[in-house]
Length: 115
Image (cartoon, rainbow, N blue to C red; front, side, top):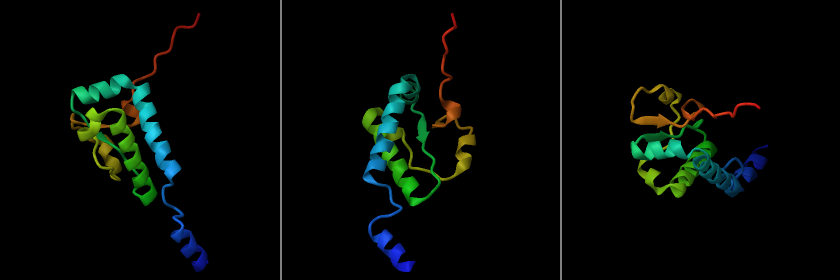
């Protein structure tokens, strides 16, 4: 078992793959494209963006890739994107200068009336 774990560790098992990092960057870009008014407001009001992770090495690497995707899509966000955090209480922060990207801050989708 130890030899298997050693071999897996040597090949990068458990680390974020190149494809995984690419997926995270593309997810961030798609989110910016789908929610332009959210990111326009963040940029205009200089609100901070907090990216949460579970704290695992692969999750932190994924968060870094996601942050890179956000910055690549809108360079105006670069100084507003904070380092990944593992503190799950940050979403209850009452500071008006901190905008965690969570489901609770996304705009409610509008539905068209049924004919």
